[in-house]
Image (tube, rainbow, N blue to C red; front, side, top):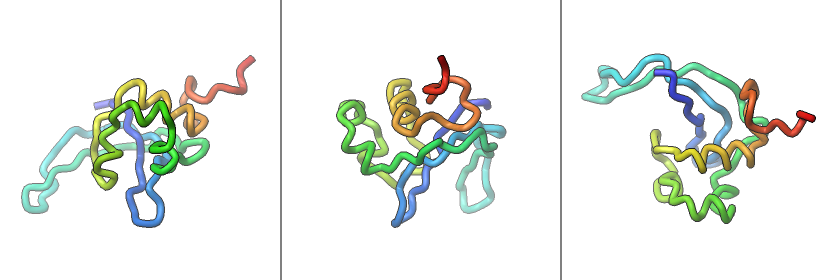
Amino acid sequence: MGDLCFFYHSGNKARRIVGVVTVVKECYDDGDDGGVAVDVAAVGEMRRPVDLAEMKMDDRMKASGFALFRQPRLSVVPVSKEVWERVCELGGGYEGDGSCGVEDEV
C-alpha cells in the first residue's frame, strides 16, 4: 500500500497519462470470475497530460524499454524511476507533487 501509480487513459481516442494515484487497498478478488483489483485514491492531475505518442517519440523514453510501448492497453506495468521522472518532466509534474515540475521555485 502507498505506492504511487500513474493514472493512464487507455481508450481508442486518447492514450495518455493524466494523473497520479496511490494504492489504498492491495490486490483482492473482485468477484468477477477470478479477476483481481486494487483500490486507489487520487493524488493529483498531471499539469499537462502526457500522450503515449509523445512518450514514444521522446529519445530518453525510447531507450527505457517501457512496457507500455509494447502493450499500450495494459492496466498495470512497472515504471522505473527514470521513466517516472521523465513522464513527470514531460507533464510538468502533477498537482500536489511537491517535487516534480517545480519550475516555479527560485
